[in-house]
Image (cartoon, rainbow, N blue to C red; front, side):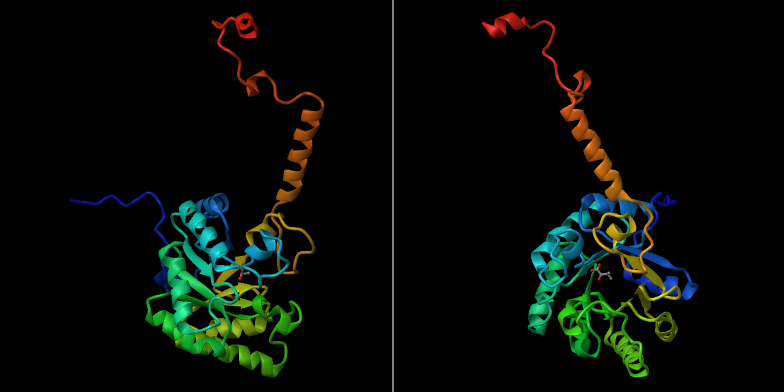
Length: 286
Ligand code: KIV
């Protein structure tokens, strides 16, 4: 008996990344933090969804990612899981959830997978995370590493600037990337790294590089969805290409609705409910 192939494109799992890299096929990754954005991103065909701790900036208005909690990422991951069918779902491990000890890190990562539906976790750091990444991978938890600008280190770094701009710093980045591959990470985010260094890393590694502000050569590109569609406040980083002005569209819609409310144009009869003709309204007034 022949089996029909499903109409839907195949679900993306970790091994698909290695195959895509071998074929030289670029993949796309976007953040999502709730059901509707996950559906939009997934249905558009983006291969990876990151439930990023950038939720702290773009959703909760914290100003940075430091205050983000496991509960916030967990709740967002559950909603993203419900909204997506095909993309690989990666949950960010918030600051403080992988810093105490390995057992606690495993417990937190397992919660993101078992309760949240995450299919992989991401954590920031290089050589300082070798044992942690090994331990997670040993517990069947797929790991994405993250080097270059690591926003959870904002206080240590003193801001959000391009990393790896000296020979020593660039060498350290390349070394860190190799160490993360050896430790078992299946992909690595390169954030705000000179494109020449990102290219060297991408060519050196068998695992996929996920670039943000790291140039064209990375295997996968990632952006924060809200930056891409224009739903943020303040200045956008240079690497963001904004494809829509959703904030402008929303503001216009809200203003138009407000005008209609104030002018008595909303709601009209089609937008409200009338009593059945058979009911005598005089009797209601009695
Ligand atoms: O939290 C996030 O959105 C990220 C990406 C920018 C890589 O870590």
